[in-house]
Length: 256
Image: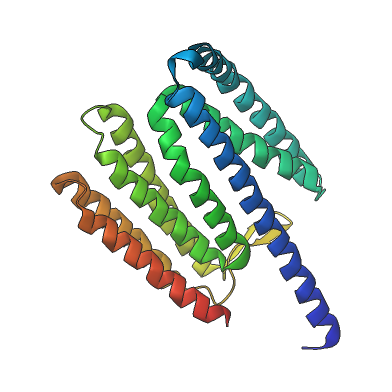
């Protein structure tokens, strides 16, 4: 590797680290806002009832406004991408609007439970961003599948209270796993390259480990089926977490 290549690689690593720091900083800000929300919206005192009611009205509005803003930013991003432009602003605004819209919808529809879920969800989002920018892409996909599996197990504890929502999520999760398996097979045949017309995108590197992708799909699917039949036992959480940690060790070694 010559001096020019080393400089280019260092520049890319610095850019990736800056993005990770932005995500971590954003998650810290969101966690701070959630603490305030917990104080004045969830565990409010009698003297704070007016503030709690005002926040409830605000989230009723944000649950509509923020998703519309997200769709507008997404359309801008897609349009600029089709034109060949690689401007950062549409991507940044779409990401911010998407995260805020998801938070607003969760708080609006799930109230106290939603706020508690966001306590865990926001740090997990920061960890996923770290994996996306610093690790191989196939490990990022495995982390998404494992995270979806853990969320599915958590939701199974609430299927008696919200059966339609829980079973709806599980159906979407299975479709996601199938989509990952099918897409992985197609990419394996094409050396990780997706091509449409003149546009060519390298989605996975040539040395991507597709066996691990298929194995993760199978493990997560089996865990969900067992949890559905026998209940979300703590052992199932442990299996998924151990599997994810094993993958983290494997891909950390590959980075060295």
